[in-house]
Image (cartoon, rainbow, N blue to C red):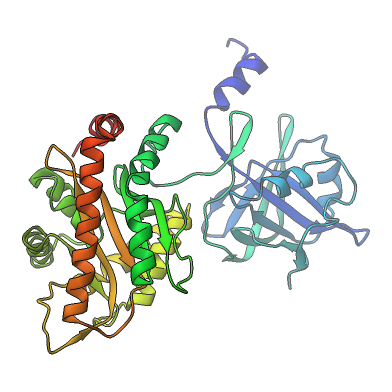
Length: 408
C-alpha cells in the first residue's frame, strides 16, 4: 500500500467542513476545563452515544478525561472569538467566558447552539488520536441558529439560502438603483408620517431593502440590506408583472401544492395586475396574525437560520396568506393597512424595483387608502422617468446582471 503523505491527507480532508464544539468538564482537581474539538460526531441511537477525538498528546484532554461528566457545547457561527479564546494554551480557558454549571456537573457556555450532556463511556486508541465514546444523559437546543464550521483553515457559518451571491459591484449597482427612488420615498415618509422603502431582487428567491426613509414619530423597523423571501404570499407585486414563467417559479416555492391554495395565489396575482398595487391588512383574521407574520420576516432577515428554523419561519409566512386577501375598498369601512406596495416598471415592461409603505396610521378610510396608493404610484412613475431619462446606464447594468444570474 502506498503511504499517504501528511500534507496530502490534510489538503484533501480540508475540502470537507467540520462542526466546531467545545467540550467542558470539571477535572479531578475541582477546576473547570475546556477544549475545542472539531471531531465531534453522533455514534449510536441505542444506546445514545456520541464521540470526539482528541490527540493522544493533548495536555488539556489529559485533565478533561478525569472529569466524571462532559458537556458538548455546539458553537454558533458568531462565536469565532470564543472558539479562539478556548483554543489557546492558557490554563484557565474559561476566564472571562460566560458559562454556568449544569446539573450534570459540567460547564455550559452561554449562547451556544446546543448542549449534549454526557459521561465517559469508553476510550479507544486510534493512531495518534483517542476516540472518546460518551454516553448521552441529556441534550437540548439552546439557540437555534447556524453552527460554526471549520473549512480549509478558516472559521465561518453556513446558510440554506441560495448562495449565488452578488459580487461587490453587483450589490453597488442594486443599491444605486434604489438610490434613484430615494428623493421620492423620503417625501412620502415625511408627508404621510410613515415608513417608505425600496426593494430590489437580489437572489434566486429573495428581495432586499436597499433604501428606507422614516417620517413623523415612526421607529426604524427595517435595516438596509435586510432580505425577505420571494415566496407566496410575499413579493406578489414583483412577480405579477414579470411574466408567467416568473409567476410559476414563485408559485413553485409555495408551502403547499394544494391546487385550491395555488388558485387563490393566481387570483391574487391577477388582482394585482388589474389594480397595479398590493396591500396587506393588520386586522385580517387568521391563525397567524400580522405581528407574528412581521416577526417571522424579521427573523428571516436577521439569519442565518438553521434549516429547521428556516422551514418553521417559511411555514409561518405561508400561513399568513389571509393578510394578502383581495380587498375591494369599501367607503363604509376602515382599514388597518400593514403595507402598500407598487412596482416600478422598467423599459422592458418588467419590474426593476418595488416601492413600499409601512407603519401607516390605523383606521384609515377607503378614500385615505386610495390617496396613499395614488401618492405611491406617483413616486413610482417619477422613479421610472428618472431611470429612463437620467440613470439608463445603471438600470441596464442591473438588469443585465439580474437576467444572467437569476433568470425569471
